[in-house]
Image 1: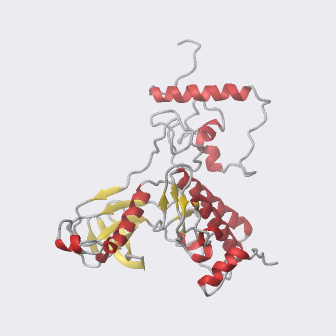
Image 2 (image 1 turned 135 degrees about the horizontal axis):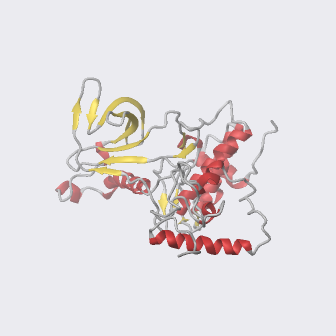
Image 3 (image 1 turned 90 degrees about the vertical axis):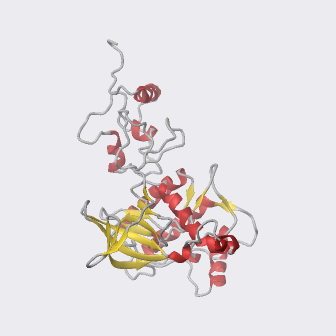
Amino acid sequence: MEGGPAVCCQDPRAELVERVAAMDVAHLEETDGSPEPTRNCVDPSPRARAASVIPGGTPRCPAARPGLSARKFSLQERPAGSCLEAQAVPYATGPASHISPRVWRRPTIESHHVAISDAEDCVQLNQYKLQSEIGKGAYGVVRLAYNESEDRHYVSLGIDSLCRPPPRGSQAAQAGPAKQLLPLERVYQEIAILKKLDHVNVVKLIEVLDDPAEDNLYLVFDLLRKGPVMEVPCDKPFPEEQARLYLRDIILGLEYLHYQKIIHRDIKPSNLLLGDDGHVKIADFGVSNQFEGNDARLSSTAGTPAFMAPEAISESGQSFSGKALDVWATGVTLYCFVYGKCPFIDDFILALHRKIKNEAIVFPEE
């Protein structure tokens, strides 16, 4: 219509986005025109500021004023096909009042047929060449995996056959104790959580290879060659500016996890992997919890003792906030970044618990 608002997309969802954005613009024009305050006194990152620009130099939509799209719409949750299409850098998760509750993610591949053969210098697992062993997880061996068609390396975690229960319906499965299923249940819980996630500050599960006819289960992750961001204790902690940048990455990742209703429960430097881009990615969801509502109410302890919050080791028997646990562990992690050690240290668990519950945090003079 002549004189009407410009329409940059034909998708009806795009029209809805523009109408809401226009309403927000009208609301802003009623104010004194002062710039929007920064969140927690921290300027938006260059990536967040660039969120309202479509890659390739495409101009912004007419209704999307500078800063408006990044403030009103999560980068994960912008309606597909609209002029506010989801970007490749999902940093800001935003409030819970999004236009669409759906979150765009790269889906995890699930392969239910596994072909394994011995090659000359490796083991061929479907399209992956399993090469050198680079570590060991709680349930199996971690190997370097090469996908020749993509010319790209990944990490493959082979879940040990001892974790897999007997086939369903067998006498062994019916008569065996329930605790035999617990390790595999924990693995499947971690897989269910990882499949939900796609964020630049969270490790990405690429593929699950789970053949019922095979003993082993394989998980394929992005390769993060630099490994953990820090080993604690450390003789050379980070300068405060570097610690701040890493802390920002952790907070962005945690904000995303909590928005996805996931409590990590084991935030610590060794579970924070450094990507090739220098940014931290949260890993290891083996003790994580999913929740409903605004927060998880927990009553059991899990995670690493030196990073546990006082309420998690209290003997009161009262439930406690799951989100708060992650925030406390993030604070302990920041202390490690700056000082190279945990704020509370003891060789004995009970003595360590007493220190966490009763002693004040001491900041070294240096």
